[in-house]
Length: 359
Ligand code: GRG
Image (tube, rainbow, N blue to C red; front, side, top):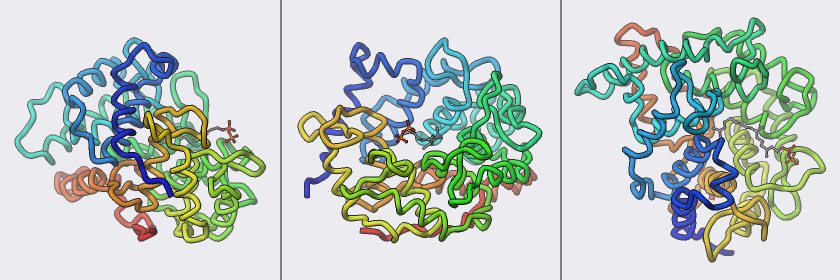
């Protein structure tokens, strides 16, 4: 079996960022914040986050922040919850969430600065209306235009959990809306009655995990639907009769881990499928063998391998979609949040799944 071409992938990710005129950079211009999250998290999992200039990244992220508090996909674009989570995740990756509290002089104690940034984040977040984006039925819209999707429920919950602000939304209603999107096949769609799709399942299961609500999931039924996603080549698809795609190595596998049913798929075959999608000469990973590579598939390929405990990769948390050591730092803030009386219910330690020993 081929090995993971770590150095080639690192080179490829760094080159996409540098070469602003490349086809990939141009088509990704409007969602560069997502690209930053994919590329930087992949670099971290590969152990090479130190090859980027942190100050440059942070300064660019802050230029994407709007008056409202939300972030856009690039400078001068409109803010959206999709990019706001990526911005917050990248700041968490660098342990720089405190820059969100731009008016406050950083205190010497990291917890203090995080928690105080939390409070002011909430001020910003409320202007951005992550909390205001919650609708009466518990669902979330992505921005001022009102589209509703369980992706936005996950994003709001993940973002507010990272910022210690989950207590500012109606979690019970958010959970109840997500459960209303559950189908008879055990899966979840983007709205009630919407077809089950592995991407939406990740969002719903992730949101339930982050709110300590996984007991509402029929794990055997959903686990069966998810493990049926594995096709002959070892790759996973997103729904019945569709082609396999490396990105589902994340959406399906993380969901299976969260519901403790990952042992129902053939892990060796999946590893082989992901490795077969590498461009071993120029780096990068594609959706399927011999297709063109891109940063999105490179990230989700590496993240999938990380979930499978591929040797040499940092471990990734299936619910926060951030490296485990980054999440450990976030979770360690909870006692401090409680101590200053924030009554923070944002960090559910017992999310109901175990870390895996897979390979
Ligand atoms: C932090 C990891 C992370 C995610 C943030 C944006 C988001 C939350 C989740 C997106 C979940 C999702 C819907 C993923 C699916 C993406 C995808 C490959 C869609 C393609 O769907 P189709 O129907 O393709 O075009 P198929 O594979 O069904 O043929």
